[in-house]
Amino acid sequence: MLYLASITIGYFLGSFNFGIILSKIIHKQDIRKMGSGNAGATNALRNFGPAFAILVFFFDMLKGVAAVLITKLFYGGNDTLYLLAGLFAVIGHLYPIYYKFKGGKGVATTSGVVIIVEPVVASILFGIFFLISFASRYISLASVCAITLYPILVYFIYDNSIEKTIFAAIIALLVIFKHRSNIRRLIKGEENKISLKSKGKNKK
Image 1 (cartoon, one colour):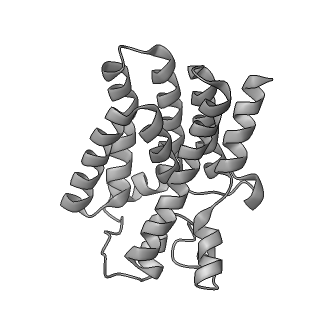
Image 2 (image 1 turned 90 degrees about the horizontal axis):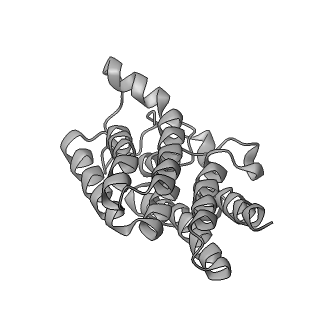
């Protein structure tokens, strides 16, 4: 029952998509009908600008934070339970029950989970993400590189923890799978670079 409760908390929190919610509240539009059709922060940036993109990223990240912290609050030091809550928060964002299982790409929600579960790893990954983003101007490339390193860093930094590494690897595989179209475009040289001034309807 405790495992089911952790999964439920994570999944139903993760299923809220703030790109969709906030675009309707603030801009009276559905972000899924704009640009790439993705409800994440990158499409928010291209269509509504940096301030809105930061807002979307923050609230989607907060879902991951909340799922882990709520589980920790109720179930204390049981690592497996809060790891499950974090994993299913990401799954909820990727495949949300509220939006016909069509969700985002999971980077923001994963960030929230990692900040709470593996803060040292989170700081390194954020550094890698921002470095690659600014150097290449490819958000997707920065995301894929950072998430690929996630389970590797977890294994070496957290005393070869098999349990944490397995959860990190599952999340990494899910997020990479959701970026498969971006990876194909990167390989072909067709991926669009990001610009803080751009609000065009580019691909994500």
